[in-house]
Image (cartoon, rainbow, N blue to C red; front, side):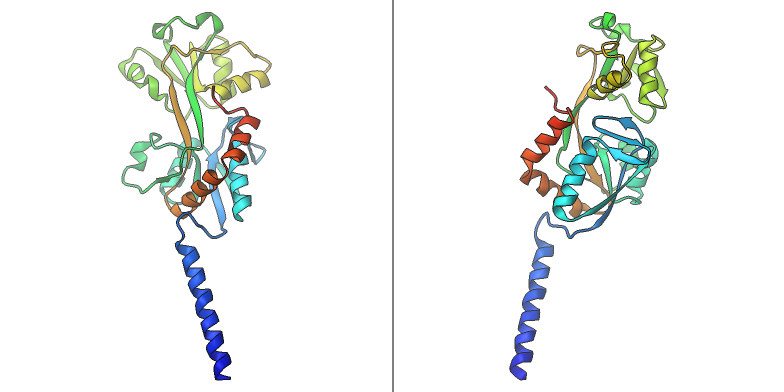
Length: 255
């Protein structure tokens, strides 16, 4: 009996040590129920929330990670500014998308952890085809979606040479620009082109690369669960082909 008890103790000790070692492996995370905060916005093909369902490239890549690593994910949509508050207040586990430049004043003093870059994007100015190439001076009234910040144009906006018009939804922004009520629409270029097609207005607005624009990346972020970010980073590094295939499927790859 003593031998059996000793053997059992040794086995338990080995199992405990193994479990402890797994917890210490860099980038490892136990399967979790995860609440991901997303933007309550139609911004397809990158992401969209319609009828209570999150869709687009953002969901595809996050679902693939969660499925491979045993996580259960719930997506909850919030208005853009409220979503950022939820992140810094620790009321969601993860936020997508995010970028260190976004709401940097709100994040000041907060311990925000970002993933590796998920996907590249261009936020730029789309104008009527006849206005492409007319230069910065042709834009007097710039439109964007409420909650977004047109970083590349802040000097002109703050200096008073450009008036900013904020619209509640992307389709409204596009309609205003196509009708000439604003001179240009500032948003993700691939998103605007996709939405134009959905609205049956392909070609009515074109991206002007000569005007100020931002080329950057979307990231996954957290203030409460950095181990999940490490887990996501490790998955992306091990699944570059899968991520590339999803980018191609959703047409979010930039030339």
